[in-house]
Length: 280
Ligand SMILES: *[C@@H]1O[C@H](CO)[C@@H](O)[C@H](O)[C@H]1NC(C)=O
Ligand SMILES: *[C@@H]1O[C@H](CO)[C@@H](O)[C@H](O)[C@H]1NC(C)=O
Ligand SMILES: *[C@@H]1O[C@H](CO)[C@@H](O)[C@H](O)[C@H]1NC(C)=O
Image (cartoon, rainbow, N blue to C red; front, side, top):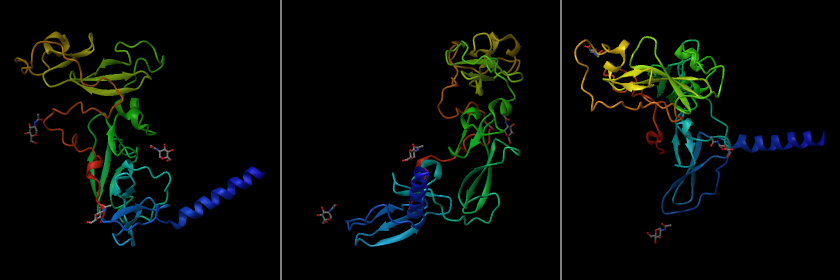
């Protein structure tokens, strides 16, 4: 009982101090003005002028203040754990929870689509095929990496890995195996150790060879020899079997289709830290 009491007591005190909000540190007169975060609100900061005077400021709606770069930035680049409060949204657009940011569609509508909200206007974007949007990362990622409920990898890709049941079985490439796509010779599925599929693709000019599990000359894959047309396949450097790009590693979603000319949205994955919103 006593423990519970103290737990509640401290929780209340903590919450109170966060609710009011104060600069995280004292403002010191320096040659240059600088920015200080708020103790409670992640989207609030203070400009500390060279005269030592504080001016309270808000990040544009949808941005939060990064203590690392002392600028407002996208929430997926900032850790707000210790400053969890946010000011009310200023958005009146139902597609934009806030005026700015990247917001996934509900899974019932699309796992691949998201809105880029800019000053309250929504721009619809689509992740490349087989890749879905993850709000928390602000990026298009392999479905198994997003861990979005109702957007499971097997559902999004409509493919069940042979090792989905017997997990951690021995795989051809150590941490993964690769399997042919049922209808597209250039594509393949990477099955990770825990039995989840990811989409992979071969460079233009190559097709997936199910026997070897790597991208290969079309002439070496009987079912796919005419994939690029009956005439000679486009020239590729050398005749060697090329290792595929997509090794199922944990890095960001590889852009398996990057050399497709008409892929509209493959380059529109949201920004990295560099596009951070500047303060002031
Ligand atoms: C502030 O400016 C003065 C004069 O320009 C200089 O001597 C001093 O080193 C500067 N201080 C800092 C902390 O940069
Ligand atoms: C965010 O900060 C909290 C507290 O400082 C820390 O425990 C947590 O690991 C951090 N999260 C990330 C993703 O860095
Ligand atoms: C790409 O799009 C253009 C015009 O939208 C079309 O004429 C062309 O055939 C397309 N190319 C491919 C490879 O789909």
